[in-house]
Length: 544
Image 1: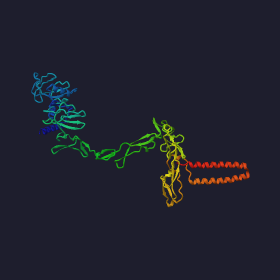
Image 2: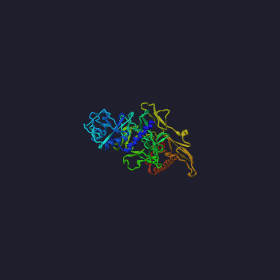
Image 3: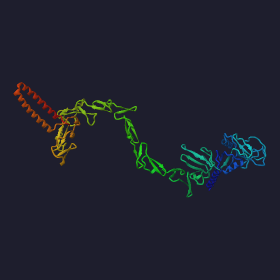
Image 4: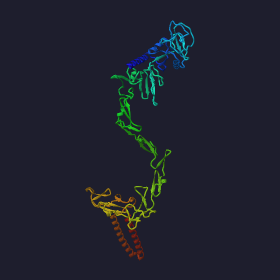
């Protein structure tokens, strides 16, 4: 019941402040009293009525403490202000009394302090005003001075709230006094904790000095930001549509519709819905939710002529091509040969790249051009042995160490195992070649597939270069192998040439003499020897 009565008084005080329309320009609270300074030109009676409407009266300066409060309120002001001291009609000046015949508006003469400006004897109704010198000046109560000071007394006040380091507290009294550092807080004051916006109300009753909002809707709308209603006897704050209560149960926030959104990047609440947005460098898809990266490199000339554009998620980079480095914004060729990347240290720098070369009797490894492999284009070749460990030797692929001489490598005849080719096999230096019987064709260099009727039939030739299954990786640098049909043709041509040369020599001997015939015959033998030697060379230079 005491709480309800207090709230009624506070509500009435609040109503009077609104009706009168008075707001103090300054104010302070000391002990159980609060003082306000009103900058409004009124006579003494009207000024006191305004203070009384707010449950107060004109200020009484009974002690040096209240005089200090007065000094703080009117500091540096040259205006005149009414205080609550007057001499009723019919009284005359009594210089023997402290108040000289004056009484306070509370109809008593109790005081421990006086501060008269001068001594004036009179018997008319007079009132007292003060200025920046704080002297009590007697004057007519009908004067309309610059303003007046009101005093409000309370049986009990609230102590200031404890404060954390990461927050501050703003107090607002029902008298319109606001501030962070109030010495005492009168009932009806609201403390707002920042930045959480929690609010508590000073009630200063016997059980609790502060109550947390929301409180009764009759006073200050229960502390609610919007609407306050009583539900089951308890106050409750209500938010407008599409808004929801904050954690302080007083203020409202726009409802975060993005909580349940499926936006890929960003979500923004918009009116009664939400909108999906994309990060910089992305574009919203047609579904309005997903984001697609914008390929900035599609813009012509975005990186100039020297550099290469590399698209990045949401951005792009301009880089120098491989083999070049960026030096002060310019792309300059990197000399990779300085780092000795080649196995045999035979390197040639080229624009943006480099080439590795191998020593004699070696060829580049086709899978790793930085490495070199031993070259072997005959049935036998020397092994590659460690100069510091001569018993450790290796052979090229497709060759095996000779059983009798560990420094000699011998070609492996893969065709002897009959496991490499499904039908026919032709051994080569370091490798082998598969080919098929008549009516089949070779597929994927290994499989023999029956020919279809449309393809016809005929003798399946030994496959050419692209059908070689080498066990050595150097086949592309070796001349093609001579086929069996080609070898037969060469032999036939040689036999014909021998017959022709024989008859030609016989004719010369018959008509041109023995000496010339002998010379021509020797020349023919040399030509025959050369031709036969050439055929022998072609036979053993096989494609690996």
